[in-house]
Length: 321
Image (cartoon, rainbow, N blue to C red):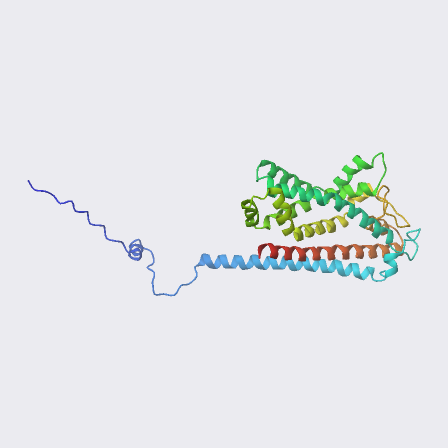
């Protein structure tokens, strides 16, 4: 009885992919030929260059519009700008010459400062909850959605809401205006601080956990000090946004005053309302003071925004460097 050796079957010969392509009727490539871009690659490159050009053009258009606005405001306000304009009271009649906007500057500072005192702690606490304790669940998603919806709510609706809540029956006051502006500032601060806290390296938190430090103590002693620059930046940006809001103040603290006051229980004059009322007058002097007040407000907003963004860039380099 013969035995058959268990020998493995021979492996099929490897196919040459180039030869297989030629057998299928395709173009036989030359391995020694230099690499050349295909038509698809050239189309993608053209599309990429076109998109880059469009983005640069959009940025230049935005800068050009900003430059035109700033130039127009400076040109119209140049005749009235002086130290006396910033430190003197407005005339009794809007149509009268001379005068300044000192009460409006003080009133705006008081209203925005009180709004910041209301919105900043609440916004920071919301951001801490979302980044440190919520864990990305449904509740966190609902809070983030509510902040985004609040950020997109027209400010005139917020002013109308505060009018019905605090003003109707009790009269206008700087306090009501501050509450309205704090609602405008709250989502800006909360979302910006949330992004800053997420930039803090997770290794800091893990190191504190490894040493047995409680979550709140590590947050207070490590995370918040590391993100302090970004928190301040977010607050400044929100203040710059609130300083230029007019609609909520029309419902809450739209008053014309001849003297400086800081009583938040009464309506205080402010720059946005003054610009609106002075520009509605039929007097040349009212228009000049309106342009001057617009320049002061624009200068404050631009300075605060540029400074805050510089601080934010510095804070991000510190956290990620």
